[in-house]
Length: 451
Image (cartoon, rainbow, N blue to C red; front, side):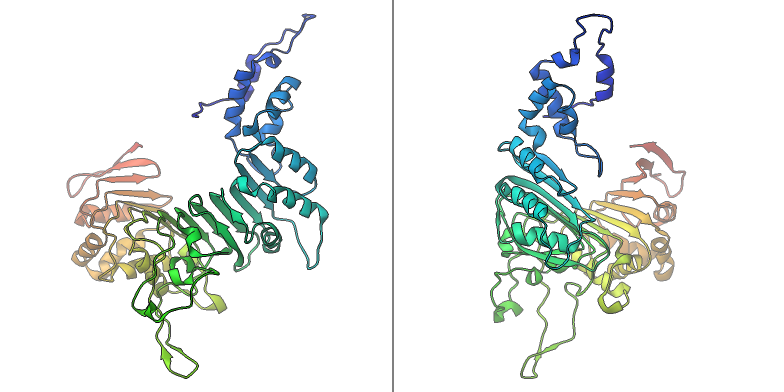
């Protein structure tokens, strides 16, 4: 159901209650149930603004007795649960019952909870035992906590358990650790479509659990999910000899959106490693890179803060490694590419990748640049020559139609483009939500208008 803008404070002021009448009725308490249900339906779609904020269902149920009766009999109001503590499992059980048989959206936010070895907290067990009884109804699950807290929750109640209705899964490990591994999880491939992992990795029952995944968001995580053979799974067969000749079928066959922020680049998928040696001392060639996604399915890609990417054992980050990453992602037929925080090694890796003859974003229509600077990209034309620069960019982005630039100065790049038109199909430039009208001639003033 679509909703219009609704200001509850204005609605309250609009209802006048006579003060001098002996029959001073609370008119707001006389609203028909049908009208109240429409109000509740609007508030059911809202989310809590932050920790400590009172959820909309609680506010609505305390306006009057009539509102409370209607609120308690409206399951849609109670399908979103925000868990910031484990002090009242009895109240949680009551809320779970109020949602009736509707799908559940559960947000667990326990960043300050600390577990020590052997900890046994009755309230913790009661809280998550109550949630576990409703696992078949959970559609959205978000857990933000320390790694040990997440492990206590998942190992006891969500690992190796069918999650038949789960569509969106989010794990955020608080505090600055490298990353933690959880699982294995058993997703329903016909339903499960989106996952976000921050400083966390998950194991799955088998690769088939991810067959329906559409959106993958990785922050401060390894990129093992980009290589089919490296996806953490418990049911992969022993490596056969034909792995050197035949690529395995990708598990993320329906992936359309990939978002990567400051990844842990070890190992970089597809990076040529030193030859391995088997138990007989004979060299074993490394397995070829096997994409876990289908090139024809992946449409949108975001690469953010690659200059913050981490290497283990204090190894230095260098543009060669990032160039390898750009080379991998250009294998996909992406239509939209978003580069965030363009600076330092990220720019150098990007330019180095473009110089590879087979690095070509042939299907790209929209390029978005956010933060950082484009000065280095424009200055690159002086290093390789204007004509070589034009050939390089037109080869890498032959059908680029729209350029979005946010939180950075686009003038160095646009001035260069006006001179040599290195993106032949570019028709639209948007800078900070303003359309930049590109002059048709070789020179001219740039005009701006709101989108």
